[in-house]
Length: 279
Image (cartoon, rainbow, N blue to C red; front, side, top):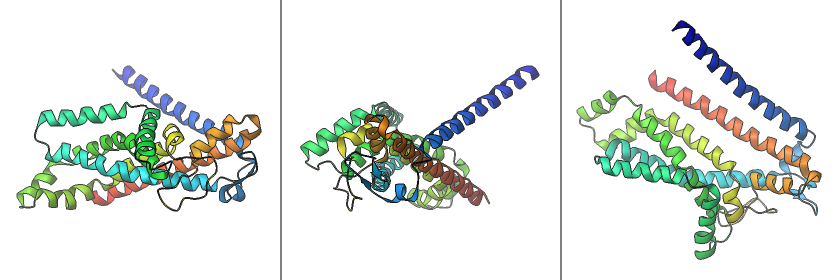
């Protein structure tokens, strides 16, 4: 048993080291090829020139990605957290609970390009919203809804049952308990799931191609305008061939850095919330 335990521990350490090495290699490789492109002008200026990426920067793509991601997070997280709360605290029928979970699992299995085609057919064409941030936000929101719901449900289920029962025993209503005990206690995990879902949406290219991302656009001022996006910009740069690869590597590194920083910040926030609530 001791030998088996040591072998499992060694295997786990080796796996973690391999994952860290792959991530460091990926970041280093992309940064090495795109370092010459990254500058303040690259981060703060719009693209210029006849060929995309030939001159200027990617600021509209950064701002557009934040618009797309923010819209998706709002549209996806509200029903996701509400569904998780209903399944855990309000649903009394096992059949309904299984039905909700089946729907969530089915949504999680839909390819992102199919969601983009659905949003294009319904929103862009039939409802005549046009290619805009809101159309893309709906598609991305549906895509990340299962991602957030599973993590929210897990956070609710890990909450000590004694805390909920004590609130009911004191005469507090279920609504009061949800608002003043459950949500504050799980806020760190909920925010973590929402931000991670937003990072997932930020890297999605397929829904954006059909619904709202364009090659050249200014920073949007409302949700009914199209916008540039980092994954779409990266796709177009790579499609142009070797002349734009340096800019493509720079764009890729900026997108990876945004996602990495978001992950680190949300991890620190979640741990701080846990320590604060337990204290």
